[in-house]
Length: 135
Image 1 (cartoon, rainbow, N blue to C red):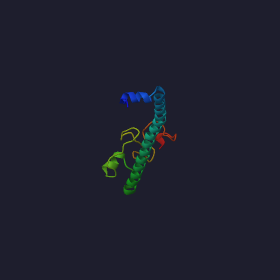
Image 2: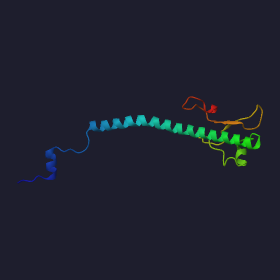
Image 3: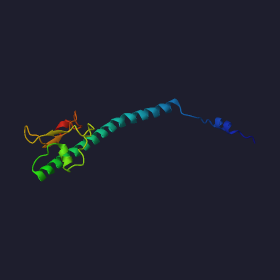
Image 4: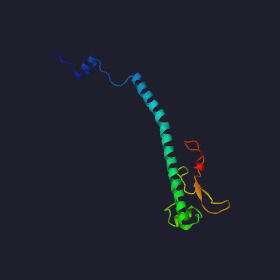
């Protein structure tokens, strides 16, 4: 009985090594399709998270301003007053601008020097189509 070497038996059976050009093209095409469908969704998800954080920060600021008014029967002079008087540990950061000094404050009356409301100082519009300055 004659034995074949392992290399000879592999060649005899037609085993091949590696991938064909068609197989590689199909894999690259699948990866491309996944990339171009996932990347836009990732960007939208990041933007939605920032907008959610902005809405939460605005809600906290507005609630704190209202609590300050209920306690003292006067609106705070600025956002730093809320920190100084112990209502906040720090002025929250606007997640769209990355800074805490870009908040736009609205006075209680025309010409007043107090804080009745607060809006984001970020330019642009949200995913819902409304400007950030109106939130």
